[in-house]
Image 1 (tube, helix red, strand yellow):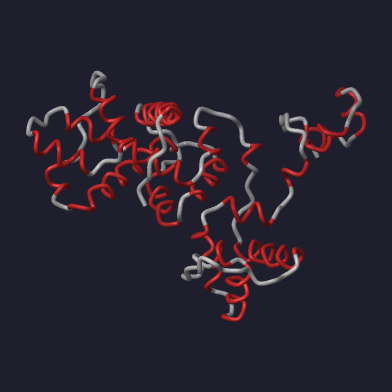
Image 2 (cartoon, rainbow, N blue to C red):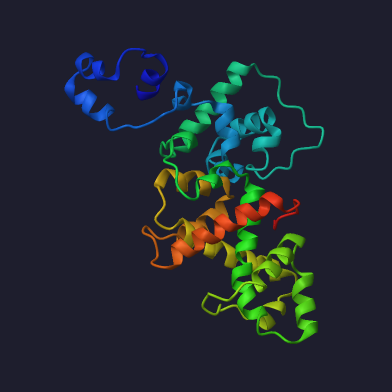
Amino acid sequence: MRLLLNKYFTGKQDALPKLMPKEEWDILSDILIAHKEPNLSLFLPNQWLTSIDISWLGPTLLALPKALQEVYASAFPNELGQALGQKAPVDATPLALSPQVKEFLLSLLFKLWKEKEVKPKELIPTWELSPLLKLSRPELFEIVDLLAMYDLVEEMRHIVDKRLIQAIVQHLTPAQNHYLRLLLRQKSSHKPSPLSVKELLKEGKKFPQILHKFGLQRFALALSGANDDFLWHILHTFDINRAKFLMSQIQKDEVANQTPLAQMQVQHIIQFLKTEPKTEPTT
């Protein structure tokens, strides 16, 4: 109703209380939204499908009868094949269905998915980490990977063995190396990290994944106390496994001293990435 009034009501705002029942106006007057696009409140199947990581749909799709799974995999081979544990062929051609039938199939899937209704990204109150809502999954991954440098830098300050330093550098992306050098030039203001580089390097190729987990923990600190709708959108941009880990780490309220610091680190990384050439994130 607020969106409709913003777009189509041309009279004076003080006339609205006289045109509506008091109880409805009392509710409406508390909704402060500047947007003028009523379609933001509509469910658009194709937009919904691209707004979440496809892994979230796996359990729902796999619970369907086999014949219906095949219909979804054929109608949306690139989008839903992965969620069904299938790899779509490079030349996969979607099942020839009318737009109306495809819309029906997606609407049915959304209904079966049974997720709670949340506000569109555009209607979520703006705050310090709002820019995260505009980022893709690979971009969020890169932020997580760079957050891990805050854990790594404190131990790097005390390493004098050049061979060990070289071994660490070889496991980092160009962006991580660049960001780590920036942090090393700054005065230390953080508590020592529990990160034990020598021990973690024994894991070999798993070292980047271990760093990624440290980054996820720091990202969860930044998200602690955030708006529920904001969290829903961020978590559903990640794959379901990472999202579950984040949910286990995110606190209902801000963590004193730690959450504001982590939020500042995320903001700094967002600014850094605006000038840093794109690199391949952790997979």
